[in-house]
Length: 409
Image (cartoon, rainbow, N blue to C red):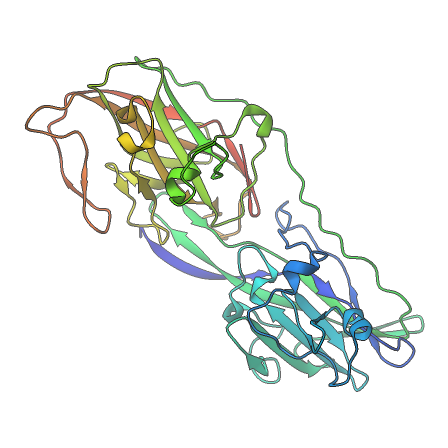
C-alpha cells in the first residue's frame, strides 16, 4: 500500500516550567525526568534561550493582572514591560486550589508540535480537553485528581503525576515504512510543601561516524551532502536552492545532525571527466537500513528520475545549468528530501538504525533529436522513456545513522 499513512499513539515530552511563588502554601511542579525510548533522545528547543522563547506570534496572559517582572519570570513566563505572557515553551503551573494549568506552545519542539495531536493520560474528553486553543497555543486547566492523574504519598509529601502524549504519522510503503515525527516523553508532578525544583537537562548524544561505502564502476561518481548554507563569497543568497549547494560537509564536520523534516541536500557528480557532451542521469534513488541496495526496509526518493509519488513530502529536483557557475553542469544532479527515520513494520516504532542512500545512475550521450533528461508530470510522475545511449553504474552515500530527530553521517 505505497503512500498510505497511519496515526500511532506515542509518548511526548518537552521542557517544563516550574512554578510556585509561595512553596509553603501551594503545589510545586516537579519534572520527573525524560526517559529514553528505543535508545533515542529527544530534541528540544533550548529552554534558556529567553529571546527566542519570548518572540511569540500572540501573547496569552500569564499570572494575575498586577503581576510584576520578577514574579512573571518566577513562573517561567515572559514580560514585555507591560504584561506577562506565555512564551514558546510548555509551561506547567499548580494552583493552591488543586488545579493543573498546562500551556503548550506549538514552537516548543523541533519540528513544530501539532497541537491537535496531544492529550493527557485519559484522552481528550472534558475536563481533559483544552479549555482554549489558538493557532499557536493549547491551554489545559484540570483538577489534579482528574485525567488519569496518579496520586501517592511519600513521607510528608502528597504528590500528583500525569503526562502528555501525542500521536505521530507513519508513511507505509510496499518495502518499508518511515516517519518524520519525533518521539518524546514528559512526566510532570505536583506536590505539597516542596522547597526546590531540579533543573531540566536534555542531552543529545552523537556517535562516531561510520566507515564509508566504496562503489566500483567504469566512472568515478561521488554522492555528497551540501550543508545548506551560503558561505561562498558572491553566492546567490536570494535563491535558496542555489545557495544551499555553495558549500559541503567535510570529513571533520561529521557527524552531521538534522531535525526530522529538515531538508537534506544531496548531490551526485562525475569526477575527473572533462567531456562536455556527456550527461549524468539519476534513474532511481532510495534509502535502506543496510549497505545492501536490495535490503529492506527501504524507501524511494526518486523513481525513473522523478520524485516518488508515495511520499507525502515529495523529493525536490534541483536544476543544474550554466547559471550554477560549474564548469560541467551536466556532470551534476541534485535533489532535496525531507529527513526521516525508518519504523518497525510490526510495531511502527522508530528504529535507530544506520540509513544508506543509494542511486542507480547512467551516463547519456544526447543526440540532436533526443534529450537525456526524463520528463516528469507536474506531480513528478515519469512520462516518457528517452532513447538514451548510456552506461549504467551505481553509487551509495556513506552510511547515515538516524537518532530521534538526528541525521548522522
